Image 1 (cartoon, rainbow, N blue to C red):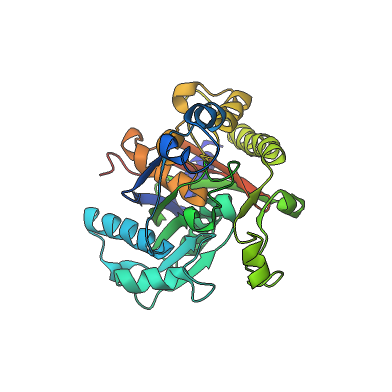
Image 2: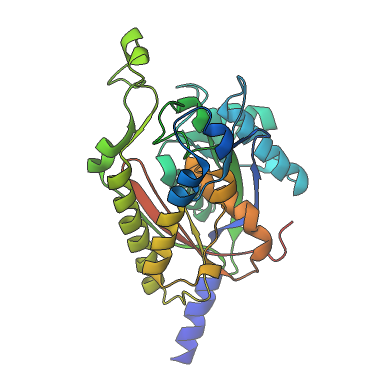
Length: 343
């Protein structure tokens, strides 16, 4: 019996997993505060802080596209961690604000940072995009064919916001995060994932025009159909329920101790984060938050959060990441941190 247990443990240790070996972020220099925003739309600092927990957000000014932030994040990672672009086997970029409908923004980024002859493509899953892109990249790595992948989430949300709509424009900011995933056989890395969708939620959170259903026209522009449309109450209710459900399921599935894991939730609304933490039985100090400074950067929130707190994690630490967004799409990842004292 003990011999069998040792064999199982040895096999588990040797299994190829995808581990985060570097993570960095880029945030635009310009900061839009609640006070400045209140001069643009009918809102105020107290209303925003008490309802969503945001005090400021970063905005990419001028004609710079989403790829600019993704490229900058990758350059920071590659310079700081001494990464040769020729060693990158693939790039997956999650975004709902691509530079163009085509080509993929991932290919634009690859060209700019010197990654050649590698697989690269975009994913559009809204706020749950990083989790889905991470899982896809992990699958590539677990085959043994790919050794090193970049998972990027980048959003220029300011490009699709109506700054006369007080229900949406205070919520979002711009930014990019990138994680480098590498093959790992010491038992650390991605342990499990839960990824789900319910297309019935599409009516509550979407952009009405710009796709084949409502191509751009004089009428769609006039009617402000190229901006984020969100019904706050049903989205809030679903986000609390779905994010907490998958996180609790992950904790139970792996018998994790809520007092010892790190919880990294999507940074959409501080009240959603607190409600999820309560449902999970999490102590506040184990729930990581940066929404106050960055707002909701859509699918970039989690890699930016990872970058902000990377010095907190030690090798072998248990991390649960969860997100919820348009689709509806939501999910959770369970990761064992693979690096001590990440730069």
